[in-house]
Length: 594
Image (cartoon, rainbow, N blue to C red; front, side):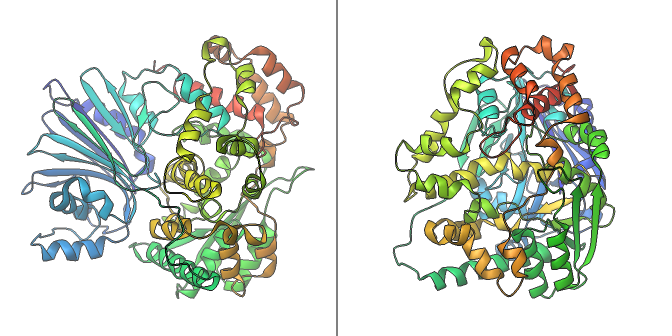
């Protein structure tokens, strides 16, 4: 798990190694164990390493195979690297290291652009083919690992974070109006390739991109998710058994493929609790678990310790729980925002940031429960959408999910940022793609292939990697997701959603954990905004920088400030927090780089 960056000059000039060093400096926290760079004329690579597999210097990066004429920088983990290595050795390839990085080098040489589809795991990598003078990049199926890029004139750059690209200089930092529309209607999700900054783009999940020395760019998609029923129907028991075995294997892989101990971020909800149960079932001893809690508000409890404690007691894990007072949350909030590669509205971002800080002092790798709700239908809005009888597909989704309808968005922004209903047009197209039997199949596919990428998945990567902590997400194992996507939606939605997981957990977990209402890492102070949190947001939104930026209509801002803890989105995000977060992210990460 690492941070990667690079530059390719398209005018024949040598890569600027000073720029590589500036980008690497921004990536140090993602990879505290080693830093290295490489250049070959117009191409320069930088890498920061978090050593997880093959801890020796042989797996340091950039990794160069002079015999094959290839160089690589890679962020992630390939869970099937041992099987791929055996297959490649049978083809006559020889290895000089024991990790997964070198397997990618040989896999590319053997299979070319088809290499990514052979990889089982989470990854973002860039590979320089010196023989073809071409840069090849790829990203995993669910975008667990980030890959941003920028092209300015005759220079192409890429990095694991927006901040690294900004440090390189020459980025167009104007706000992208289409991305801004997505940001405020889709819960801070800006689907690839856009970001909120005009000059920063990101490689979509399940895609590869190639840039040659002349600047010619090609891009391809190597994986699609099929959400249709199988030709041979399965019984409910067959589905439950198949899903149980697939998840068991996904958890096992993510525990075994590491040369360091693996723990669990235990929220107290069904998903992370089930990971603990399955790891125990797999025979993992000395299991480490970690939980975080915050101050209560009158509306909401700030911790889920009453549930996580039951799981700890059941399995005898070595457990650490951390309680963070609100004054510390407010004090540390700017740090968490600095770690965001893009603005994130999710209120649990700071929770993950503060939890990861503590966990990273004791362990390097954890499993986390992200993806279970999207894969198995756990959110409250899914049955509501399914019950809708009228309206187009996108209208039925928007009614229960979009943060703001288009007319409200037009009231939010200044006229310069008004425009068409970009979000509805984009989502309508994605929902209408072939390969989904029912509306809910299409929505769950949209969630796991597009929306989850830029909300919980990105949040977990950013907040854990800010502390050199690798988070693995077994519910987004692509073989498990492929199986679940073909499972009937009525089975997934049974018993309030996530029925296959609840059925699996019965007998493994206390009933109170299985039957409880859906929970999160709660952060009530960012949902019900008052006191010092309100003053902070008021100061940010009335600042000279905010007024000069001219994003928000004053009337809409005044409305939110008049009743800050009453204006919530359909999925219970605080609308004032959304505006303040974007402005604070821009002030801390972008201003001064334009």
